Picture 1 (cartoon, one colour):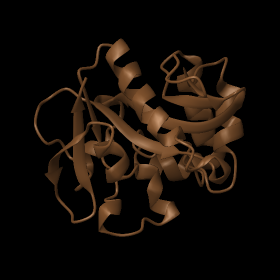
Picture 2 (tube, rainbow, N blue to C red):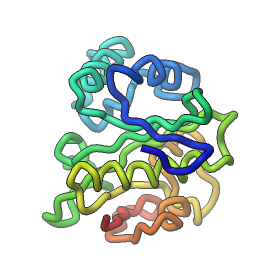
Picture 3 (cartoon, rainbow, N blue to C red):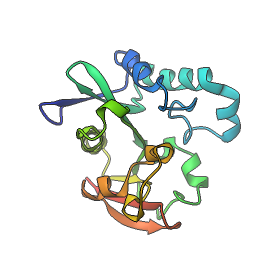
Length: 190
């Protein structure tokens, strides 16, 4: 799957797993989560620790479940997005911010990571575009996200993994709920 000539988007699978590790095993990336936060309970996440969460994400990738997508510039991984049907993220149902809005079947975009050196170069925008395309190819009709509202002020890098309202609104998402001042629920039909 390609989204433009400079950035290529590929699913995280057994073949791309070394690139997932390259990207997510760096400082500032996952802090032991390995994008399992919304997939596991707090206890499971804590008991697994960094190694167990890495193994759990690897298992999903090796099973062909594509727990996310990678962005490449040339042959170097420069970004990650976690995208899957919402039911694969049970913690969302318990979240005061992300609890279900209605019974619409959605794919959930739960995490974005672009390393510092690739930020500001369009990688996040291409990851969102790739996530929308991937969800549509897999039979999805709607993608939901739970970003931080950067239009209200700066977003600390520790919270940017949720995505930013300005990025998603610019990608055609619209607000469908807002349960806290800085964290709306956005959707885009695909």
